[in-house]
Length: 395
Image 1 (cartoon, helix red, strand yellow):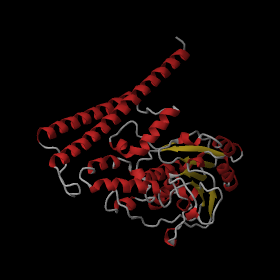
Image 2: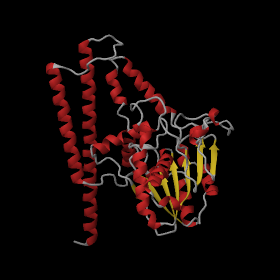
Image 3: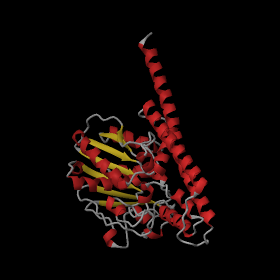
Image 4: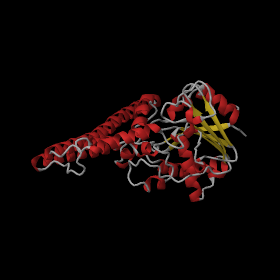
């Protein structure tokens, strides 16, 4: 048998193993979700059986007697199945994600919504942080960082491919794309990115970082961690562009958090709040734009409604671009009044605040507002890349 059929056969076997590993990983996730649903049902059962007053605050919510035993058996069964599916998936294929666009979109969304739980349970569906794309040893490296519930594939649409070709051919840069678990705390991902760039620092002399949404916050968190650890790579950072990054948080997460807190008013609704609490640490960080571990560790509880952050200034040295999108048809000098899609307000994306202690400043800082555009269009709209071409400095 020739080498080519053998290679093709090996590729088919690898593809089949990956598909089965994906199915097992999804089954693990389903078992974990099933266990959480059983927990909610038991709490509702336990609450109703005690018949508390509608607004009574402290009520035992676990089922008792035979019913409680049955619920515990069911939960443990889900737990054992969850562990078994995870072990089988890891044994079958250590990297189930591959390059399939549809699967990556699903896995990226899952990582964004509950990626911290996936990582804690050692699920094969959890993304590991990695830089993707070949390098050729060029002096300048440009790295793109995706946002929440996204993967590197989110960049490769619209005007981005032409911009990437321009960077390679005329800008003389190596391009890479970061993939990471966007459900983890931004501070944790920032620390991992700082360490990753330090390991890569010997391969380039100049570095440019371009982050969309959460990706921009990841840049800031990595810079903070690198300064604490004495890393060398920030000295090679020439410029950093942050496209629609919620430097002061997202109103959508704040609204969701308040709605979830309302469920805790009544003991009959409180068990349902558990489902809302399953959203990832990464999503919770976007409530106010948490960048450091202290931002969330010092808060009184995960669902706090006050901003507990300390101001984190931009390190001096690199050039910065803060780019915002607005649904308003015309640009405005009053960013607080600009229309937005509730994902990232204009003032938050521009790092502006009525409190000067919170306003982002740097020696070389450019703020740009693109009207008639929504948050997700910042990934592929031609106007974004026209702006980036004029702002970027390539050696």
